[in-house]
Length: 144
Image 1 (tube, rainbow, N blue to C red):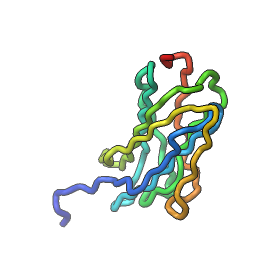
Image 2 (cartoon, rainbow, N blue to C red; image 1 turned 135 degrees about the vertical axis):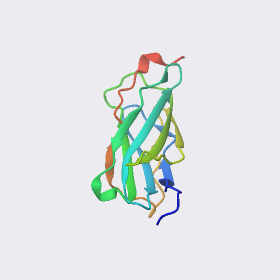
Image 3 (cartoon, helix red, strand yellow; image 1 turned 45 degrees about the vertical axis):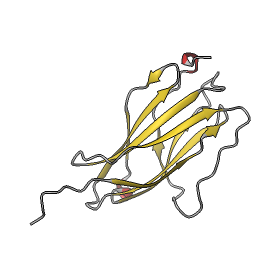
Image 4 (cartoon, helix red, strand yellow; image 1 turned 45 degrees about the horizontal axis):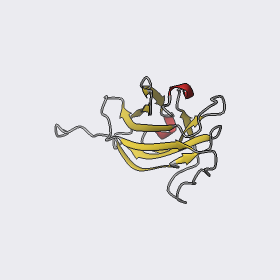
């Protein structure tokens, strides 16, 4: 018989570039695990300076990664104009089928026309697409 402790998913590694050019696709790398092998969702919370939070969004974890997650979420910004010098913050948590949620990890992002997106450290993450961050950025909301 199991003890009464439930296993909680853990984000073991995370990485995202702190700056990108407007129009680029931002890649957010996550590596996590669940001892019971029942990872279900990635929960994303995006806040934008001058606008506040966007609605909470969920990205379903592929069946092949239910025990061990390694790959990237992505936020396309090609359709959004006027993002120069906009700042965002993304918080990510992973959730299992029982509703247990990992500790959050946070990523700041600044849009800079001269930025070069950084690559993740070699050998830490798989280059597997987990899914898009399903929000459409509102560039007009940023405070100058």
